[in-house]
Length: 218
Image 1 (cartoon, one colour):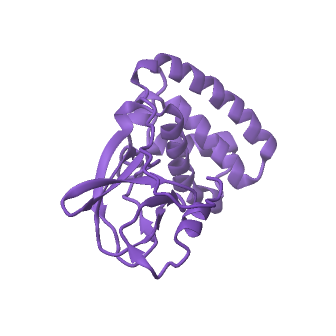
Image 2 (cartoon, rainbow, N blue to C red):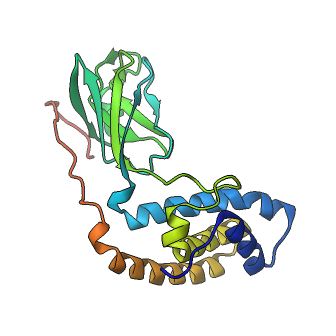
Image 3 (tube, rainbow, N blue to C red):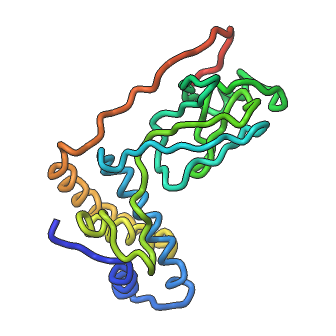
């Protein structure tokens, strides 16, 4: 990609393109750029973004914080008696049906995405189990103290259009957002062709479902 940018450069470019230097808009730009980075990482889905992250669950709590930077969870394991045990992805509704009593604690079997920052486990963890999560991780986030990263250096144009879409969401201009989405789609197609060999192999979750009658649809 010929176009490269930086945090400060993109910040100024967004103000110029939007013709908006108001305090409210300028204050929102770091969040706009952060959301754009997440969009680019998700859409490119490159092997170089995939990492293995570790941490510890919080006992007696269904909602569990994801490790910082994890964009999407491909797999989640916990360590039980020294053995790595895979958890199976389900919907939150499925987990609530299978383990309706959140106070009943046991070794977790399932996980769901509660939101971008948290998982939802069932049954409720009975111990502070160590976990291993695998999936794409956002490069070091852009900021005034971190001017460039892989995204700005290699797909800066894609980041710019993703940021412009987020600008229109903030400014509530759906028509212009649609125009930028068309530009973004064209740049994304070009980037995917150029980097096709670097895309991640699609992960197929392990399936380990204990028998239980009358389960809801997943």
